[in-house]
Length: 194
Image (cartoon, rainbow, N blue to C red; front, side, top):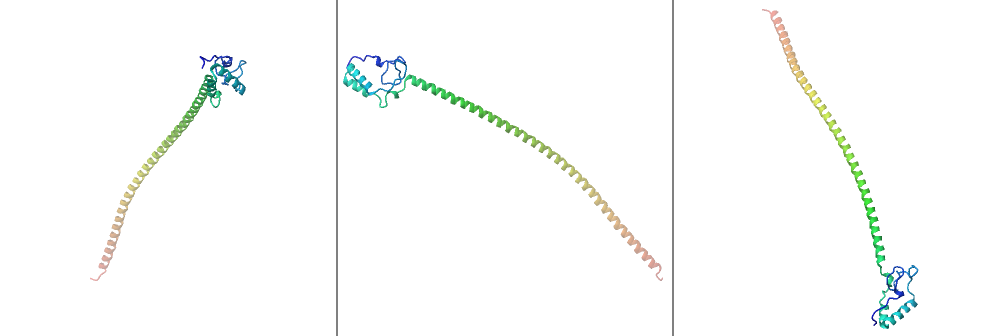
């Protein structure tokens, strides 16, 4: 094994200025365009350069270490930063929508509570009107009770008067009967033979 691997131009990313593996497609070439996937010829060239630099077994080992799907499946710091930005933007949008939704819900609830409060005020007003009507009805019942008491008093007076009139009538009939009987008795006695 050699003492170290010298980074040559094929391992340098001209787009971002980082030393990188030529297997990584996320880096750009000298013109700034994204690199394309390695062809079999490029892989063979890399292997032969590695074999010369570190030996054939070590080169074979390093070439076998490539992930099954390729290096392009691994995220770079730039990919993570982009993902972080997208995630933060997404969360900010969700939070904005949620805040807007909560504001709308609060507005609807406030409106609903105001309507309910208004309806309760109307019901309270109607109950006050009903209470007032009941007070009027109670007052009318009190007047009717007074009138019934007056009628009861008049009826009692009428009954008492009637009772006196009946007794007076009976006394008059008795007096007339006694008078008639007395007259008849006197007449009969006067004309009776002595």
